[in-house]
Amino acid sequence: MADIILTGPDEESFGGLEKALGNKGEPFKRIGSELTDPGFPEIVGAEYPAVIVARFHEGDLASIKAMQSYRLKKPCTQFIFLSNKQISPAVLTLMFNEGAFGILEEPITEEGAHLLLKQAIKKSKWDMEDQARNQELLQINKSLQAKVNHLETSQSRLRELVDKLERMLVRTLSDNLFKASKVKILLVSASDYQRNVLSEDIRKVGFTVESVKDGHSALAELKKIKPAILICDLELDDMSGVELATTIKSDPAYPNLHLIVITSNPEKIDGIMGPGGKVDDCVVKPTSAAGHYQLIARVALGALNL
Image (cartoon, rainbow, N blue to C red; front, top):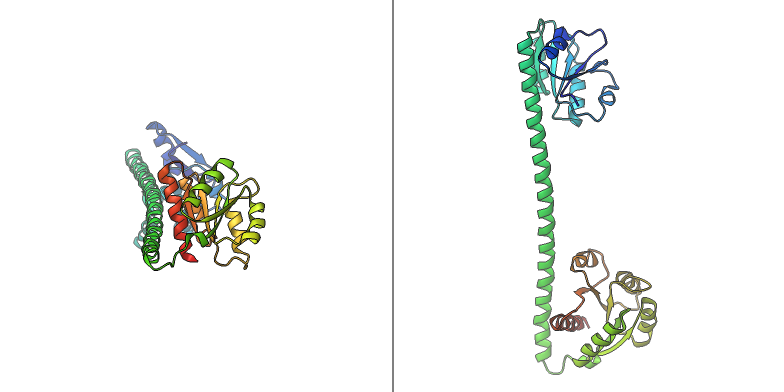
């Protein structure tokens, strides 16, 4: 792609600029169209020239408007206008205020024209580098903002957990206010091993627990045992844990059911717990003793909603 585009009708001579560029070995592209033609941007196409040279006709401000329109889409392109007459100070001020880089008055000199074009190319390259840096900074800022939002969300959840822990401590130290055996829990998992292990852990601390292997079985079991807490895998054979939560929470028969989703991927927690979601809590699938303790603790915290 040539850095320089000369634009004008076929009979346009550009005051000898073509010859001057050829003598300097400076590559350029010639377009047989006026800058002011309605289809000019489409003729240039996806190219991003550093400099466009066009003739400015005395008293005709359409060239300035065409330049404005073009630079809205390609702000790094510099415009140099050719004129065979002296341009009034008022029009010159308007041209430069609206983004023109320079004027070549005829008769042009080869050295002067080449110097002006090289300066315009350099300015275009600088502007492109600045634009690229700005885009990079915008991406960095966007990434940092996402991290800040994640941290704020995590801190909010942590504050909630601390608050619940404080209330749990008060309740467990009070006179017979917290009876674990009265809390019914339904566990939903496609894994027989996980259902057995987690059920045993939950029973050890005194909760009453039943387990099923899929979402439809869970919906049927809900009507039978009316649990206070439901724990389910994110991935089930017939539906996702989030879909199950949405179905249950949409049923007025279970207004206070506390629903906990288990996921093996910590990065999915924000999506599962997103605004407007029906999931009350999300825990990373336990793979160690510490993980099992965390799940049991979160189940106990859920019992505070009863």
